[in-house]
Amino acid sequence: MNGSKSCRDRIAKQIVDLPRSGIRDFFELVNTMDDVISLGIGEPDFVSSWNIREAAIYALREGFTSYTSNLGMPAMRKAACRYVEQEFGVGYDPATECIITVGVSEALDLILRAVLNPGDEVVYQEPSYVSYPATVQMCFGVARPVVTIEADKFALDPARVEAAITKKTKVLLLNFPNNPTGANLTLPQKEAIAKIAVKHDLLVLTDEIYSELTYGERTQTIASLPGMRERTVFLHGVSKAFAMTGFRIGFACGPHELIEAMMKIHQYSIMCVSSLSQSAAIEALQHGKPEMEKMREEYRQRRNVIVKRLNEMGLPCVMPEGAFYAFPRITGTGLTSKEFATRLLQEKRVAVVPGTAFGASGEGYVRCAYATALPEIEIAMTRIREFLAGLQQG
Image (cartoon, rainbow, N blue to C red):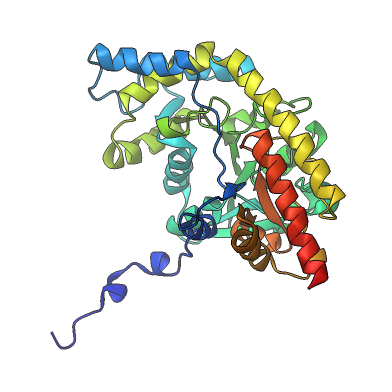
């Protein structure tokens, strides 16, 4: 029909302008190839422990297949709050200060939709998890990255945080241990950032999905510091530490008014999280720590191997303090991050993620996930060394 709009014209502006995920685009290419060793996807290669799987099977066998409370099963909320108090030292009321979500991704989406007005600014560290700026944009907010640098081990500099704050800044979003760099924060750094949040009256969102996968001393959560509990939403889940990505269970703990606002959105969009997944997550939080600690030690060994090999072959790499990612610098090759990752995949069948998937400041780096078996990591490192040798000969 003459004069009708195109389909593109019908799409909301904030979605038209939204870039596709750099990770997902790259792995569309990976999926077309054989014999690829993937150091790309940030997903544990372990299977959820048997007691966790058995809890889901038992719930299914007993016919527990109906809706739950919008906030989540009372038993799940109690388990989450008890776990947060025991492991992180912050107490929350499971009846009013906790909501169970479809992963941390939904929890982040809910809280940003609940608090952002058009034009409100969210300060966050970069390189960062790919969904942070995108989620802010979809909530009509403005994402303001604070660049972290290799010289600081990719930790967040409090002075840079304060310099990024304007009159429009409403939220400070933190993710430590960090995806993609593996960086963490010291207690003094957290204390300095907490004082800035109080000074500027900011809401703090702390995404601690990798907290259990910390390889040194785990410092206390920023939510436990003076003046922070009432202005912090603690985001966590079972995907990474308990190898439960497919169960899609996250949770948020925070002040009642904020959790209530999140629930309003959740009840109309998602309604509730899978009852079977919640049953499995209760088991994980109550009895999953021994298996989690075994997985962490395996990640530690892999981390030590991959960082040593990368540095030996001339790709400088900071030792990650948490998560399961190495973030080596590849500027010495003369290739961009995308060129390096694409050619490495095509020529040597090793998949890494271009650093630019995590923001513009990721240029010159690639992310290597060591969530794969050590023998495959060793083969991948040999292939990368061969790739570098070929570049020098060329």
